[in-house]
Length: 90
Image 1: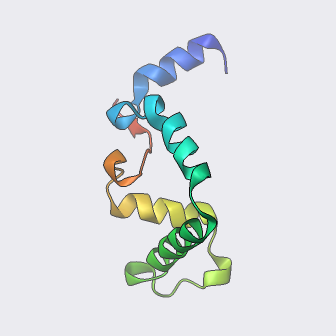
Image 2: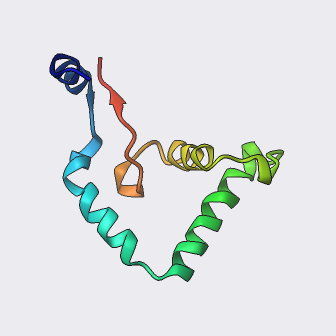
Image 3: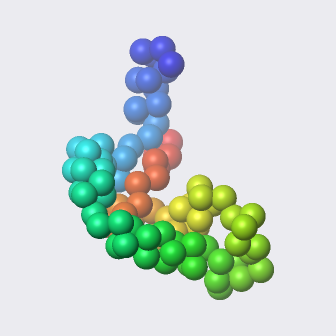
């Protein structure tokens, strides 16, 4: 991506609630979490992605990014709930 393209993308999108500033902190904390906790968190995301409106989802066919997207969508992309999707402000 050229410098000009980066500038245009930066003006067009913003990270909710200053997300880039805290991204390294959240990543650092995530890598220090105990494996059993991370395992149960992953199960919660998968369970969420295969219930309700997506109850007919075949679990072995569920892609990780689809599960994460459903988790983010259900919380409105609010960074306080662990979501950090780019918001188009154009």
